Length: 296
Image (cartoon, rainbow, N blue to C red; front, side, top):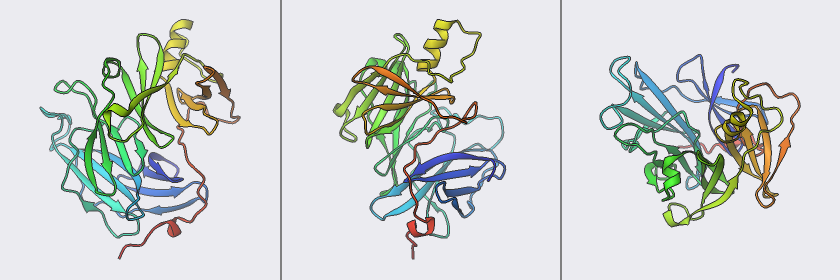
């Protein structure tokens, strides 16, 4: 599998799609180098954009892959109808079974496949795509146990609606990382109690930082480089046992952030390519076959 996209991760396993062969999906364990290929999808649309997700069903103890296709009857029409979606089709696959199943329920909005998702306790979260009929991005979750979509309330504050944000899981909680445009900082909001709007709390404020190894565009001034690359390119990856936050910058460099001391510590990894995609995984040395509950 020399060319693939990472479309999801769960418990040390990766969900990969082949970039050269359409609708070819693998589940891969990078620690044991074991892979399995999923059955082909029966439904196929000529003009489509595919969004996928991968997670664990804590009720049935099975791994599942969700696949939503946004499609149009003709090319170059665009995928945005008067209220956000022309047509969509959602299927789900349970590892250990023979085929995909169609879901009756569709996503309530057009989900943005370009932005990172967040998997929290069997719920996978997306942002919706903004358009002229819906200015603000909502948060939509899929419950892998009930196999249903639902909306998740976001923090009720003005800065959250006015600025770009991304979703991430930190310490078992759903978090929203908000890039505040007016002060060049990054606010990290944590949902302490799932699906309860009043439980959102701004727990971290990350200042500007340009780590060693980041090569910003030289056409920017020094000040513009620092502001642009410390906020727009910052991706919060995980919360460490030490309490530090691991942050990726521009797919080029990493740094630790200590919120108590408000200090950064650059992470130097020798041999990294000039540009990369990072995924946070926990070590899993179990065989894929042993991890799959075969369904009757």
